[in-house]
Length: 476
Image (cartoon, rainbow, N blue to C red; front, side, top):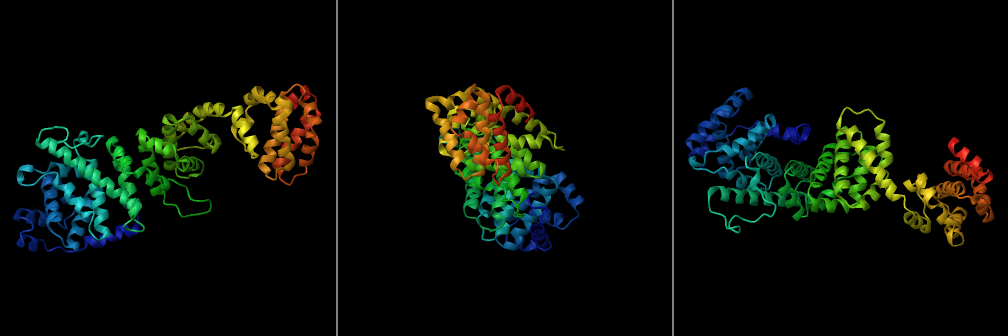
């Protein structure tokens, strides 16, 4: 389960399970049956191996007895005890959640009682009960045998004109229970009941539930996609406060939601989510974080608009992928994902290397190391355009080199000017006539080493003939 490795949570459960519950008083009060009492006495406080044997023999009967207590008993200590006991059983074997769906309807109960009982417990005052009920309800929903019972549109059986058969009623009850549970999880993300545990618990539950497409649609309709988005974020550099499991499960939710088109559209429209995923690929030390971030980005890039490819390229994903490809990975999926990303991003880089995009950046007066600046194809295709209209755009570039105080803009500008000189037949003369050589020579004394380096390369190309400049380009 979610917090098995967290001492505070574990200690809570251990303390609860030390209690001695007087089961007979509940039988005397007719809150449980004689049969329930016998089952509870036989099971409680026994060795785990013996309990496992009992569950193998009559698991559904024991689960029905536990449910009867949760349904009829209101005493906090007893409710907490049963929830902690059931959670411990499911931690050992999550498949035991299927036993709740095997309860004999003819015995006077209904296998669907579990949903209503656990949903009611979500609204108890103590967080321990809420949390355990949430985790148990998650496992019960995830283990139900008829996954087709949930529908994307969420109409009731009656609205569809369906028969009043038990199967139709069961499907409708599951539908309502799932929708109610999703609403509760969203409420925990909006206004947590517990300052430290509500959000991790809700995200863990969603990471399990969102494996199903109908539940993704429910979360989208409930506004949950927007609530998850802020949780997909690497902390600032130097901040050691990182809940790796929460970040992993929030990112896992993002990946699962990327299979639902409406939710994917919301995620693609969030530059914060996209940027956070790129940061995770670049910075995360845990392999599972890198893998799930790459998986989410792959899906979003595949289904998203072209502008998303622009966004991930501008945020430095190609460089991050290139650097990560040099590492050794124990997880064999990561090299495959990096390979796909590297190949696919080449198309995005080529698309990004457009003259209109360069022109927009130049006129904004802020140059960056966007992929187009370092693309030979871009400069071969577009250098001549900078000297059109009486060198209008070249003059803008030279003005930036004269007036900008931004080191990156100056370094990129020197690099671009060198490319113009290299790719235009009379580029040296044009640049010299417009005093470009003098401007760049001044920048050779700039305090920033990158500006110095780019200025030096540019001056060399301005001073040398084109054939020697081409030779120098290979050397540099």
